Length: 256
Image 1 (spheres, rainbow, N blue to C red):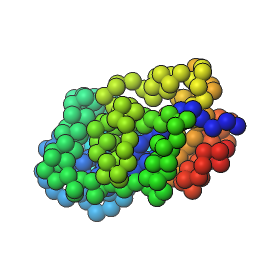
Image 2 (image 1 turned 60 degrees about the vertical axis):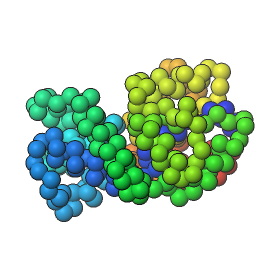
Image 3 (image 1 turned 135 degrees about the horizontal axis):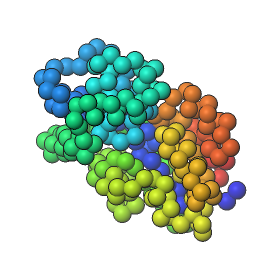
């Protein structure tokens, strides 16, 4: 199979692991929104949050996940019915997604402004990612893009930390305010070979079901934020390829 003309990459869970920062920001925002004081999180909560991270689609959901955990919702319930649980908490407590997102982003902006080095240190690029990105960016026949629900400015900060000179106009972030399916359509899948790498299973399913994206090759980044059940589902899906970190670091013609 021909290698792609456009390679679209998710950021969190594909390029960069920010679990430590996610939990810290989520806990601080939760403490502020529900006015529980600046107490340290209970022992073991961070590790449980990391395991449940696959349910999160957009950053504003993170403090709501903390709320559900504090209220005693089981991990099994959250994995099976996160959307319903999230909506119930939001409605009951009179919250709006936009306001929560402003609080989450505000926390991040303040941390970057006041202690940038500490904020950056809470993240790491997965092994082999940085050199592979530099190699892909140097390929004149490949159009590389990052498609993320993260604010583009945060992704840019982290790429600069890793000394990756990624064009800012090729980072399509949350401020664009459109689903990833619509972003992929802007790459002209009817005329170009497009590959899309994502770690969120439900996002890949939505792309796989889109009638105008049937030609897009889809890859689940198995090193990212997905569950064992989702990895198994990917291995059985007719359109979604399971991609290991080792394979990602190889030339594109080795991926399929």
